[in-house]
Image (cartoon, rainbow, N blue to C red; front, side, top):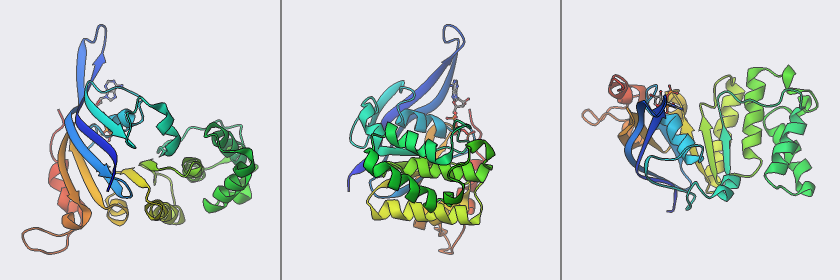
Length: 252
Ligand SMILES: Nc1ncnc2c1ncn2[C@@H]1O[C@H](COP(=O)(O)OP(=O)(O)OP(=O)(O)O)[C@@H](O)[C@H]1O
């Protein structure tokens, strides 16, 4: 198995004030890898460093120390961004564009040839349940509709790595099923999904493996099947029960 993501001894300290009067440690020498073709959950209490991990992965900020490999390359190599899809819990799109215009715009940025773009956009609008509202401006869309549009946008380039950052916020039951279908399709294609979530049942359903960050450090890494069984009694248990002790830990 190849590794889609690899962090080796990565730390990130934010500087704040002038000149860096306050130093805020967000990640502290974390090492972890994520195998290609799996769905991996990144969990942890508030301010444990999850967003910082994603920002480093996307090359939006630089590590203070350590090495990062993304799809076999450094995040400094921007060309691998074309192989990544990203969904954020609060998608911000130009509200005057229609759903179809928005997807065409992002598709052009992904260098999808024009001949393939229109059929692809129409297929994705259908997939996420927005085909009947494709020509309306996004300003008329509900939160769930915008989340669905964000999911469509993240799939335009058939991503090798799909990052889902709190993706179910605002999604109804069928939207959540859609998300499950998308993750299963990713796996079938041998593509990787990274899910950042506070919704444990969703993680139980979707993920193969889990990493829990606490106070900027890796507090646990395990197969989901191992976590869903109490090691002492052998009885089944929920992910929430398995991870509760880690969420009681105080952040720095
Ligand atoms: N741009 C920044 N400047 C200074 N400190 C920051 C910055 N971004 C994040 N931090 C700090 O880094 C730490 C980790 O934040 P981060 O957003 O990575 O956590 P998180 O696990 O995503 O939290 P949450 O679950 O609350 O979204 C926090 O103490 C936060 O205040």
